[in-house]
Image (cartoon, rainbow, N blue to C red):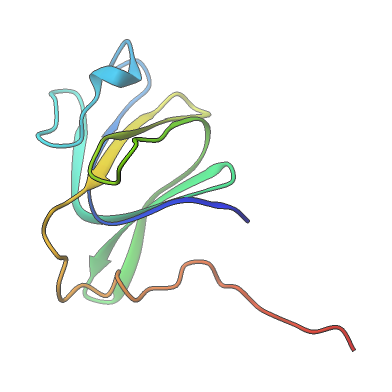
Length: 119
């Protein structure tokens, strides 16, 4: 598994298929009309999958998970990153300048890596 991005805390905007003509028109904050905003989220982009999680009283909660076809990575984490999923949804996200203090998302390990050695 190749980790392409792991950003926390992040501003995230999600738009349904057809809401914007071009993914470059979508920005994460302030969100544009026609998109849904998710604040203080953790965005993880691996291989061909994007996952968005938020904190909840019972711990990290995955609110979006889908395979993607296009990932336009910003040069810095504070610049917009954009994704087009296989179903045509669009995401824009960037690092929030706040610390995300008190959130369990910072220490959450979503990778479930199991190491083993060959006998």
